[in-house]
Image (cartoon, rainbow, N blue to C red; front, side, top):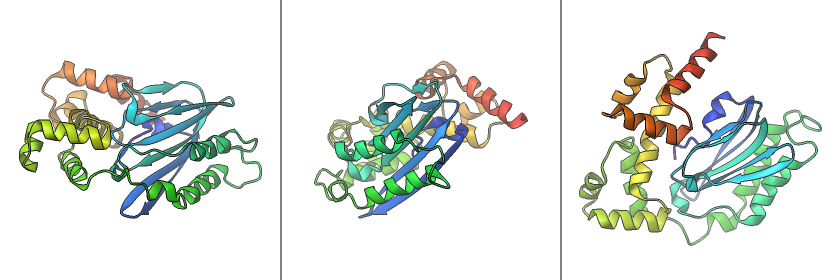
Length: 252
């Protein structure tokens, strides 16, 4: 799993991340706060982000997003991101209530009663999920063949057509599409689309000094208008806009 559930995590005031690995599956737990808001991007796997702004709770499911969600206000947040082995399964309602309780507690992320309240919240959630038998032992896990097909898309960084994927896996395009939707709740085209544009954004975040066309060409986008649309869909901003933000930060 190589997710980017919170694009603005790079700009957050503070964030803690834990990785849980169990029964050949993995879950990322993140908790933090941001004075400048959050930008939650579409995701190919199951997960939830719980956000608290001025005591109000908002749940966002990145795997179901049609476009990026922008939270403009300062906020605290907790996200749980599950790898593809979980299929379409998400946390139970009682597990989500724990996340919300931690975010709305009087001492949440303020430092009262804890040396590092964000780290403390991350550890508490991590411990809870590690012991959550209902999550790790469910029968609704994704088929291993679908996970293998997804790994092919990851290895290609999304730069693969569904016909090429079907040929590599020895099956029809229709079969690949049907099995992805059944097991993961997402079409293989959307899956590859997210992986590809996310990799482009990652390159910008890691090496922000280039021109827009450098990243576009590197990821195989031949049409600039198409690239601009994909980028805006995924991030809610233009590629030039993101590069300007990153450039301004570098100059501070």
